[in-house]
Length: 271
Image 1 (tube, rainbow, N blue to C red):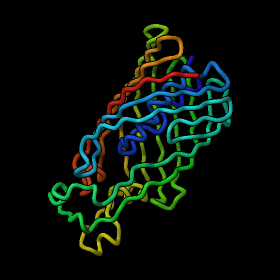
Image 2: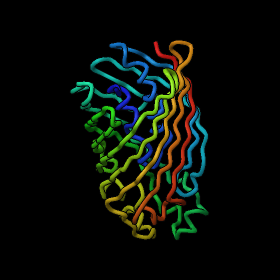
Image 3: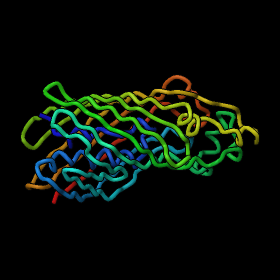
Image 4: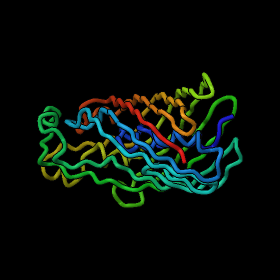
């Protein structure tokens, strides 16, 4: 049977443009599987994120991160996401959470040449700000696998948008120490959210940027998580993900490619 902690491991993935911080959260929350046997546990470790972001000129990046997690019967904290367990019956769980949205980008971090190929002058663009989302996360798990549904909205006034993520995952336990979990997810972004991060704003259009508003958008994703436990409380962790922008989102002049790739490797010790 899947534990509620494992249910949360698939939450808030890189359907949101696969930002490295979100990938880090996904990685360290995988370790919660080993924490679920205790009422309160800390996890410490280190991870490295290798990702390709779709923003024009952003390209591939390799970023090391410290990994810190905490989970009790009532509260949890995984990297950039923390919350409260409202319902936890084993098969069904419901959480309220707050999560940082780190999809923002400074205008100067766009590639000037890559934007020019899309008909955009980088000097016409403004910064996209990071934000904070509040939401609810529900999951249902059993021998059939795990279904999850997250719904959240920006509360900082950055995008004033919303997103909903539907996911399914099924773990294959090859031994007591080694677990592989493939997953699929579909993320929906509201018009406000997609337009802010992947469209052009009124102030930018006034400077000469082309008017572009992708509107409500979908981003499908597939992923693969791996966990190998060793030396009692240690674990090697990994996650590979592939996401693809669809519809009008894929035609945004702010992106260089509609595909996003990521790979995370890390090590974690639970206390």
